[in-house]
Image 1 (tube, helix red, strand yellow):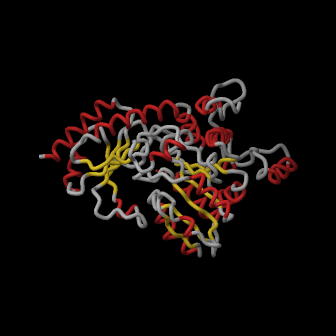
Image 2: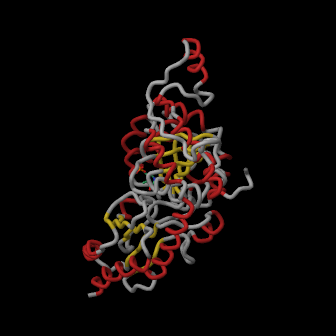
Image 3: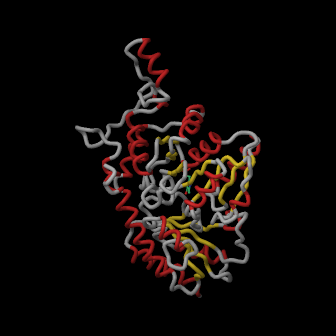
Length: 388
Ligand SMILES: *Cc1c(COP(=O)(O)O)cnc(C)c1O
């Protein structure tokens, strides 16, 4: 099977060997055993082998989705969580303890900053942010550093880092490397193949793909799995069978959806680059973007995400009024559904190491599956009012 392309493998993973095309939804809490001996034996084996024992320990529905995620990311095992944020929290709490030090990218998904501020310090875990391109990582690493936490490309500005080089640094200092791979969603970027130990996914985004389900996932190498498995059991992390079914259903069309999002985003980006009020379009797939060379080397395409940096003189209030005039872009978070979205980004709050002072306002767009000509016409009528 290893010679098959990833999009083909994605259609075959997590399916029954015969009969129905899709794994039926197994809604379950209690599993009834044949005997006390069967019950006892299952309990002694259920952490080293996958078996039915209790709803929270997994059902056919969650196992099917985990299998598909392992196939997609090329990992050893996967664990599901009710949100992407919960998946990130499990990685931090499972791998770190009092006295440990963690290095976190300055381009991190912003709610992770609060997780660190409110909980890591309280637990005696020291954390520190590093530049989105990772160039200061070697200087910041300490003997107590247990984990490097990356996100590539980064949130909002999509900064790239040289992940294989960071993985080599992590190995040299005997610490683990975890990467938020929500942008790449397993098809566009593969952190484990590039040397990471853990890939974290907000399945809420492109895997679900239809803005109708929340979920997170962690896919691990064999080295990282035991700690992630233990903390997930101890924190009671699981997902419902219907939600697992929805995400797996969404994943069957991941490849064509991502290809179309990417095509539309590049068409909209090319038009945005001609606009006088825009300083630059942030997207590593664009030649001239600081991350373009690494994107070309390590990524297999781009998605629907673009951020727009306005000229420094364009006022935030005028930009927000223009956003309110958009008809096809909803003002909302959680991109990755089929629809177009827009939100203002506060880069001065979203970065504490990288210097964004003096730069123009940033707006994040998620380019959906609508016809890009319609999206461009909508953006055009909204931006034209800025010029007046
Ligand atoms: C949305 C997002 C998350 C969190 O996912 P939720 O399911 O909304 O909790 C994590 N990381 C990145 C990069 C995201 O964009």
